[in-house]
Image (cartoon, rainbow, N blue to C red; front, side, top):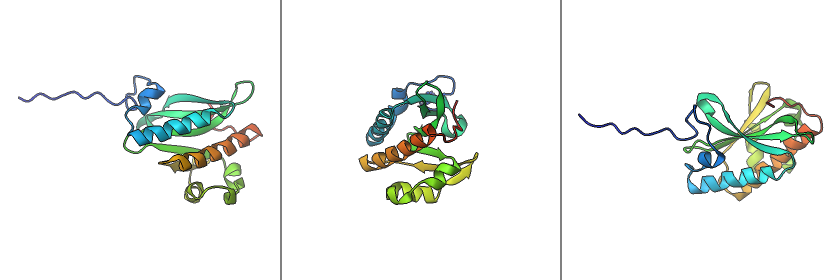
Length: 162
């Protein structure tokens, strides 16, 4: 009879144990971890942005959520979702129709524009997904997050806030 080695689940997969940010980023390939850390760090430099870790079920599991808060500390909405799947880390951004339709695509990078064109409609939002691989991808995403943050802080809907 052969022995079966028990391999514990990765932190992002373990439903019953909430991981830390570092535990979620640790299993990433070195370059992916650097890019995700850079994105999270730059997003947190935007006033009112906080990081939360939430369980989103079998598809996204433990996900890093960038949350926008107003001056009083009240949630305005979720800015982005960092899904730390070691095989394919993804950043998802949900946009309300008024934000999505009001974006000036001429001022956005090709990286962002291409995904906006193929955004999926679900849960009353347009969903875009990005897999950044370098500094310029992160800068483009931060620009998009800043636009969404401004939209939320000037009266955009706060769907997704928890």
